[in-house]
Image: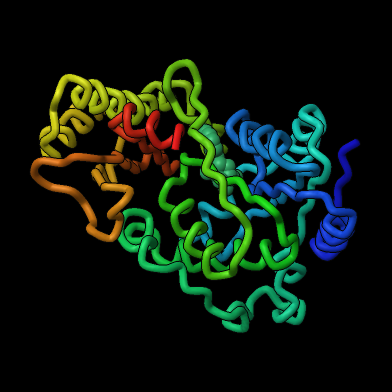
Length: 299
Ligand code: AMP
């Protein structure tokens, strides 16, 4: 049976009890408005752990624009029903002041929250386009880990750079094991995202261009294209709009992330894109070399 708490301290106690019984605890942090992509993370956790808990918290610390925060979709009852349908053990939520007791009940005093270094892989891309975003992510993820002390935590490849930042955070803390789960897509190729709920039917057709661009680059890679500029051009070639404002299209070598955007001939590449469409921010990414993924998975 799925339980739910509106107090993170209760979730911390629940997790401590589970660990005391010798159970492994899988943890999936989310901002709610759950969809099939989130459920993939939950199912993966259920396969690998004795119990699984999910947090739903729209973290104001990681939003640069208060409007985006205010408009972020929320539907906790539907979230609970979805989690219950896949047999998740616990859903918990909380207020900013509950996650951070150092605020003394005043959400305005965010300067009282200690900084957490998001590390070098937070530079560029999302880090460059969303001021303070990864500082906010690092603060909440660290606090969630401290509360739950999970055995394993699950993050989506959909937010690839975030998963790298979280890996570094977990390494510094000494726990948990971080699992990265492949992006779950609609049959059209569009990556599931809570923000898709804010797209009109016409905008949804435009949003599909993001994944179409990435798959076009993967096709080019398959036929031997290795030039970063040509691959980037293949992606941009699919971005026709109307209304699509591209923020970045970049290729990076996941093993040498700090190198920044790739140029010239490349041997490994993940393509990452972000764009705005009618006030909604969209992101997607894809490893262009499928054989590299297959090899990594058999490692
Ligand atoms: P969010 O609620 O958007 O913060 O996402 C919570 C977690 O779900 C993050 O680790 C995301 O990367 C992951 N996630 C979001 N969308 C997808 C998707 N389409 N496929 C797989 N994971 C996803």
